Image (cartoon, rainbow, N blue to C red; front, side, top):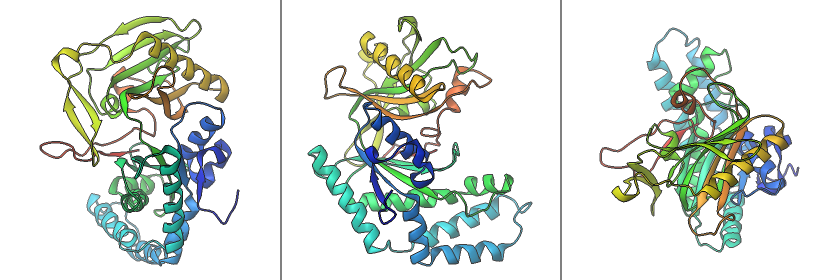
Length: 357
């Protein structure tokens, strides 16, 4: 790969580039190169972050700050909160070098032209080299280059939340490790979305595919909402062997700025959010990913509202899946690094969902 560049289209990267762009970007690139339906987008490399902290002096100041603190074990959560505030300020308070801004702006502009949408809405997602469930931030429905640049920096700073710092301290990892790449992905206007496991999360049964879905964006599935639709599909025949249509009272939708929770209309609450053919196609693509990647997969997907079947099915992420102990709900709570999150909710509504992964 060209070491002079900091941005790469998904079709230019693969699973071999995890250390260049982070796992999430590498997986998106791998699926794109397989010819699977992935929304267009690009990766901002880990080197971009490293160059940012080097040229702005943030890296030097962060290292000096951490060294001056000395041993932080046993000093309580307050020390992690203090460190988080200080380290994030050292990043967010610096201006991004013009050549980095220009390159990200050029790729975002090209993405707008590719999609034919001015200020195309995107998700800005963290992409670490190692999976750190519950650690890092993603921002949805981000529009316009200034907002994209702001969210890139916020993703970088999410490596320094109190929880992320405490995790590294407890694992005897360097406090300033976990440099992040960033995935910038065109938003899908999702009519429905969800997750698919090619192994049963609790029992470890590999003969079935489990699909969980809700109306709107996938955050309505993995944010703790129990009223979702669940389909169990035979992996060999792709026949639906079990179906449960949940009472879906709320869902997440994109708005002009960010996303919001909305009430599902009463007449749709007990209506399946996927057609039978969509269930079968999601299962087929999940099975194909398992076959191509050589192990059970945990797949995030969405159904585009403005396209006909089967062109309306998009893959947003995949990662190796494994069985976990506990209930299906607990398994979902532990699922994929793309979606592990903490949803911060304003009292009235979500103007923007900020979630961790």
